[in-house]
Length: 131
Image 1 (cartoon, one colour):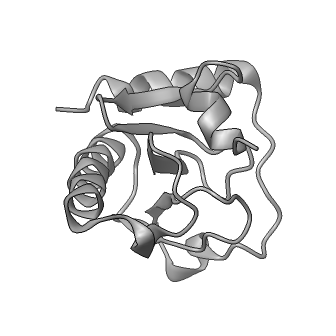
Image 2: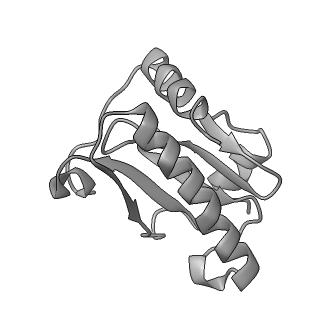
């Protein structure tokens, strides 16, 4: 059965896309722990990040770097944190989280509730910064 992320890649489920190329996709997490929380995925469904071959893992990290730099330009933050958990969705993914303090990357805190307009504004601001 296809993961929710594969359904997003296939266009079956909408997302707030911030960047895409032929191999990778970046979109806003709809249950963010910070404004601008982005998920970066390979388009090929692979459950575990470290099951990706070296080429795809390197490509995912370089794509994530481009997105993280865009997040930092688009949103007020000191740095963009990186987290790999991989337990909630069986599809390799990287969390990019704008940080102003270490507590900003606490996945146990309540998720933010943003409106569609807020998600659209954030995704557009980041997308405009992707080089």
